[in-house]
Amino acid sequence: MTISAILSDLDSTRSYREELYKFFHQHPELSLQEFETSKRIISELESYGVESIQRIGDTGVVAVISNGDGPVVALRGDIDALPMAERSGKEYAAIGATQVDNNTGQETPVAHTCGHDVHISSLLGAVQAFNSHRELWNGTLMAVFQPAEETAAGARMMVEEGIVEKLSAPDVYLGQHVLGSLPGGAVGTRVGAVMSEAASIEITLHGKGSHGSMPNLGVDPIVLGSAIVTRLQSVISREIAASETAVLTVGSFHAGTKSNIIPDSAVLQLNTRAFSKDVAAHLHEAIERIVRSECAAARCPEPPEFKYYDQYPLTSNDESVTAHVRAAFDEFFGENSVDLAQVPASEDFSIIPDAFGIPYSYWGLGGFADHQNAPGNHSPAFAPDIQPTLDRGVEALVVAASAWLVK
Image (tube, rainbow, N blue to C red; front, side, top):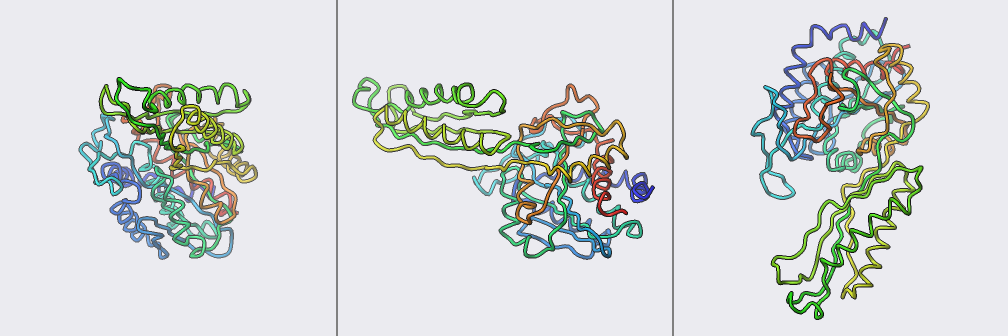
């Protein structure tokens, strides 16, 4: 079988790939600060003999293997880590890894507690496999190592830096994410909405400061904010149809400095999730409507301010492309090819294929043998089992791409 031949070096490269994974795991870097990560990626690609390698922006990397006439298939792996400390207990854990966050100027712990180190290693392994067996396939393989997924900035940056103008449009864009919700070694696919649209919203409420003993002379933004938080809880239960899925979370409420001072402002931070663009738009309209109305009722001296950030598009898998990938997975992986439930987390994966105007498919990769008790992504304990996860990550990318490149 041709695909098995492309993957025939997995046994001989396994130890090397595991050590490479541990390197990335122990050297996590924040979004848009993945300088050593991208440097090592380029070094690896050069060692494989890949001739076309270019940076997109400071830390984005794209490798292209042109191998005759045929389809152009893009594979994507994200490369950034999170500003948090790892507590996985692994002997190769990134204990003490820190980095100065360019956004805050503060030094922060950093860890690959979302699994992007698995994505990097898997994509490098797939590139190595295809480059070592060019005689077995035809077409063009494009490997996109994308920074800053965790801040929804990396894909947009690569588009702004000209990835669409600098590269030929792929026929299809493919990617994966290691998850704790799937059985270890499984690959899970789904047609349509697979990861939610998301946005964070910072709301500044303007009150009128006063002495705590004279509340009548002020406009209390704490009471106002409390009313808003309570009223927002009705949006999901009373404005969104029961057949839809949506989440509205108030994750932060900051106001005041002392018990007897009514402050002049308060800041709320919200997060929304939805599997429909219409539902997401409804959430945002409802939030602004309720906040503005409550501010008017409270006699605020100024209207509220809304700042939207960390905005992620809906990830909705193309039906035809996903059916093609699923058929390839079913044939190669058998019972390890499974259905993927909708994932309420969010991704910027779709931004680049949307900019190219091409279809895409994004699947899940099971990372834990004991998936029933596995930590979720972004948990300080999230560190997938090295095997079979690393092998399966390479296999899944190769099998999916081969559905177009191998005839």
